[in-house]
Image 1 (cartoon, one colour):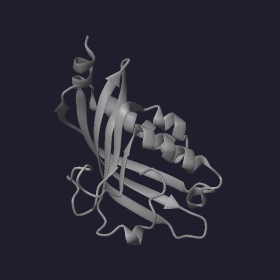
Image 2 (tube, rainbow, N blue to C red):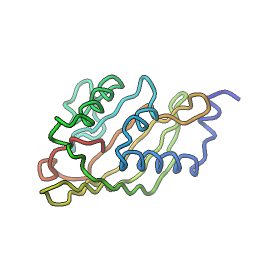
Image 3 (cartoon, helix red, strand yellow):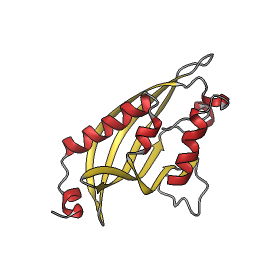
Image 4 (cartoon, one colour):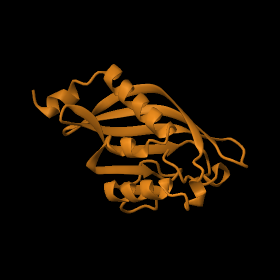
Length: 167
């Protein structure tokens, strides 16, 4: 069976399990293990609140990382001299309304809602609410993140504080 047919035949349960595993890794700050869930050509995007469907190549995004930039982001997040996340924030992610929404070539398109609670020393709790749009591909039989877009519902990011961790 080809990888394309495998992707097209993924079940919601399989996709949910994948997203829940991803959330668990991020909440536990197992960032290298999380990175292993991505493809070598992945994109990680947090678009501007007023243009969630914009193209990162022509619009200023809050975050627009390729795989190489994700590797560097994770190095910084794990570095004790990175004061924005040392000690690391405690986070708790809730994922809901997981849906397989279509396919794009060899990728399966997935949507899900999220709430990320962030707890930081000497700061109030922050809540990041929004929805994810994924493009998942199979590599060696396993689902991998080819693209991940975190679209925040908040009207302005300033009130939420710095997004120095992985949404």
